[in-house]
Image 1 (tube, one colour):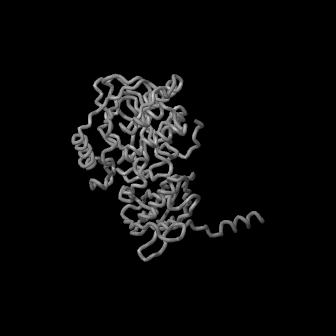
Image 2: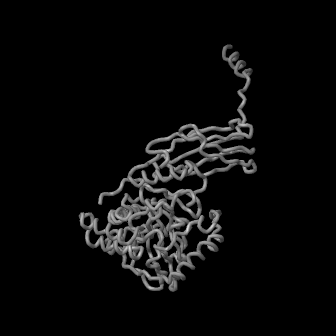
Image 3: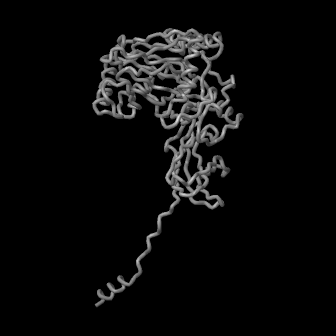
Length: 422
């Protein structure tokens, strides 16, 4: 009887109504680990009406606002926080969706973890404050920064006698060996240095095995024989990560930057890239200028007609080309047409006007080339399509700089992983 009564009660109890999903959703995230320089702030939102996206800084003040159109309900936005302006530590930001009448449609908080250490970081922070650089921006570009500040120039971009004296002082202090001094002088004169025999047979074998595996797995849709590059294999293969953080390479980069070098990305090639002549400055961009280097490692003896790397000695002294200097919009959706019209033509004109001549680079396996961010370089035409040109390129910023991609307006990333012992 009691069971029957209980069943009646259960049947008569009104069902709980399921609340309708809110048409407004908002999430925000920053990296869980500290970031040096720029801190990415990834915001996703559903907003079917016109509204405003508002970001409030740690003090509660509004540090970013943008109008949102309701035509596309589900969207996202990648913002960049200038960590230098926050200082070392954790900082809480509030992100809001607000209606036209000011009503809050959604609100969330996110913690930005800033790494701001070292003399270079302090000087960059002072410059950002003096030039009133915004704390949060949605599109990065050279116009945000005081590149005219001569006090921020690295030693190797100063007058030749000053730069040469710096190398002399390092040698006299016992901080470098004579062969390292010679390499640094080559960097000053030509815009690159060549380091032979950095990798041994075992390291080369492991790197080539990693490359073979990546090709066999068709990572990123790789097709054998193509000039396609494979991105960031260091995230998948310990051998490539070991090269990414090679102590001998890091030591030379530390000397160049006069600050710890931090890897940004790796690009692996089985065959020659056939990439047009270019400066890295507009692609992997540092503020202050000069604090980025490319490192090209040969995994095999480079053969003629394989699409060899070509460098233009002395071109690191040419003017730097940024989007702002040629009135170029941000490259979006993979459309590089305007970039070619405005930037590539400027590069070509500078080479012709300066009379710079290309130098073909055919190193032995295990040799490392370190180049200045502004050095003009290219991948030559692959005249023998059967010849490979196995190589890995890694790019490095100095810790303490603002690292970004001027061509696309996106933030760069500096690895703060523990560095291996030298």
